[in-house]
Image 1 (cartoon, helix red, strand yellow):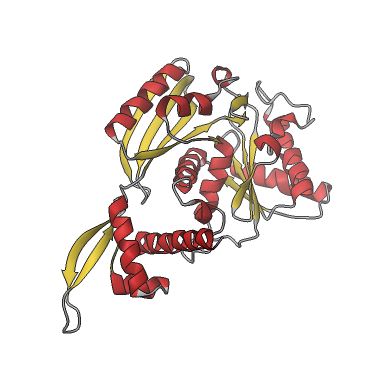
Image 2: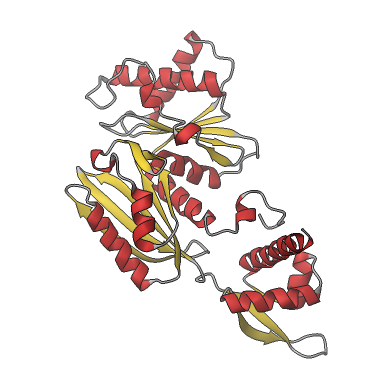
Length: 340
């Protein structure tokens, strides 16, 4: 037990130094000791280990108050890389976009391919090429318009993805951990990361694409709330009597949005609801919601935000969620580290 406790404490201390270096980029050992509240002796051994792992490397020497010049160390943000892939429809065709990002969320490479029909083989070829070019890739994150259950894609607006065991296939072929995330979940996470939110805030993202059913993501207490089998937010199954995938009269569409917001508001009482759509102008929707609100009393009145930034938020959120997978396990689950 004592050995286990010592190993855990070492991992925590190592992660504290790692997170401090990520924030400041360069530092001397005494500076790291001050930043982490660890002794210089402890920092010496931890820096040596991080050097051996390739996470730190020696940088310049700096003057040291009359003593020997102090050696600075620099964090290697390219030590571990993530491959982030999203799949979306683009003017009736399928766009597969793959980006290699480092630990500072900088893009190192990007490849796009447009296909008439989604092809897994073509996507796997892109992955194989990029993994070959960047052996430091440690995780693959994929954003899809759907949801995987026990590794199998069970819900998707893209028929070509239905029933595919994407995670299993990719992990078997490339020997890397794979994360598959719903596009709306990623979008509301990306939006939330760019906002100044209270820790306990609840925020919903509702995406209303043209000719496809709506989807919803739930951001709660700093995380995506996924529900059983990741199936939270499947609002297309609400009995609203609307054919979301077909041509819809604008008035019927607006009424459908209002009833959708009413339903999720009553159930979840969110602080904010972000509506992603570009079918009806936001002023018309805002006026319709106010009129609807006057006729249908609700116990909670959320802030409604009308956005046309779905793709930007989707890409931003997917990158951040994938990079989180490169963090040590205790850091992802609210660790002891002050650098979270």
